[in-house]
Length: 267
Image (cartoon, rainbow, N blue to C red; front, side, top):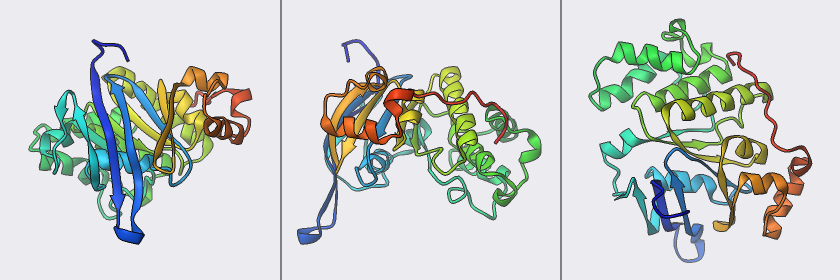
């Protein structure tokens, strides 16, 4: 990236290690990348490649054994402080498992505001639901009363209610039906543009990454293989054999491109 471009996140030689001795697992091996403000950046690779571990390391859920991270130019400290969690939020893969089954949507959205001492909670909840395409009638429902797409919308609303600048998206559509995936991707794309958000998206689906992201980093066995733009991805002009193998394994992705249906109904 050229000088003068504002960087939301800078990751330098990040390493994550589990265990020790013969049982040591180098889950992430000195990975570096930078994400510009307002950008959607993708992390792709096979299961076990380290892409989700990077997200967990960023938000303090995985043990960092080496390297540094900077958020908006400031070092990321350990443990993460309240300012970090106001700026960075995560949306998980499983929209049911990430919501407490005995908590209403109202309580799910109220808890982050209570933790951070925010006021105007009623107005914020109504606005957050509206932003993700859910009306006020959803406010007092329980997760089991919602479809998968609706639960993921609530999870996105919970992440947005603190007005963060960076969203970490860990396979946010992989547990959903294809048509609902399209709705959630359209929602995420709209929210990023309207709010000026920055995304880091983890996915094994190259079509999803190509639809939502500007650039991506290909991961394999904890290593960064190559970084490329999604235009290059669509053109099939990857430089590494591994990335070309991913392309050819993605059900004709290189031939069909990255079309995602423009579905807008509530899922």
